[in-house]
Amino acid sequence: MEATKKPELLVVTGMSGAGRSTVGNALEDQGWYVIDNLPPQLLGPISDLFSLSKAALPRIAVIIDVRGGEFFNDLQVHLTQLRQREINVRLLFLEANDSALVKRFESVRRPHPLQADGTVLDGIAKERKELLGLRESADLVFDTSDSNVHQLTNRVAEAFDANSRSLKVNVMSFGFKYGLPADADLVADARFIPNPHWREELRAKTGNDSEVSEYVLSQPGVEEFLKHYAAGLKHVLAGYRKENKRFATIAIGCTGGKHRSVAIANQIAKILADEDDVKISVQHRDLGRE
Image (tube, rainbow, N blue to C red):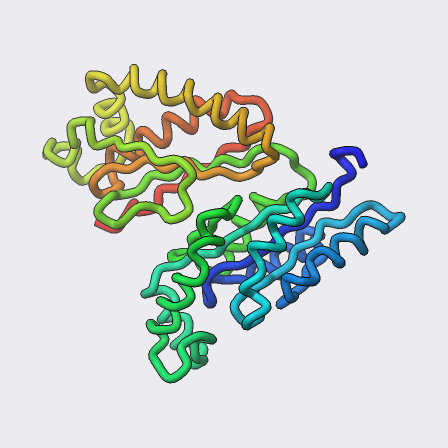
């Protein structure tokens, strides 16, 4: 079977309340054949069935989660078996922080599937522990903590657009004091640059303002950092394309995510935009939080 003819299978899993239904709906809009709550034991037979289709091979998305009870525990084993066959299988893991998950369960007034006689937080903690191995082996992680339905739908569209084979790269700025982005593939630290916060005329501005950007980019060592980091990224992105990885998040952090990381993220995005078959988007996660 030619590489371009391989069945494409996306397994969607992750934390309960992290947006699996939204992702499933968005994938259907992208032309995927979506199956919800399938026992992992049926992944092989489903893939075989679609492989025998005389029509154009569909892209199959299967949503599997802890609702499957004891059947769910075998997911990792079946994923390993599928990856040894002529099937292009990827694992998308949906993540969210405890606070966001608790709010979502409270808003729908439903218990967490694993909380039993405990609290929602008890269920979340138990689920995180059970999913740790899957989280670490995922091909793609979406942190939906700060995403609404429309933002998550747009992100799915960017990552799984059937009409584009380009590598989608999200360059994200963030503030370390608000925590590392859970879905970052690569993280760089811009805190080696003098902080514009301590310049009174720059404090109220952001890295999107030309005065701040010029200040940050003109500091000693920044030009060399951008040159070498961008060169390294180009090798990484080439490897991602070779391994059929279509979505990557590059995170640039500073203390608050307002000045340095924003300016550096914008500049890195500008440099990478010249790469062939790479589609760049920019996200400033913590801009406006201070």
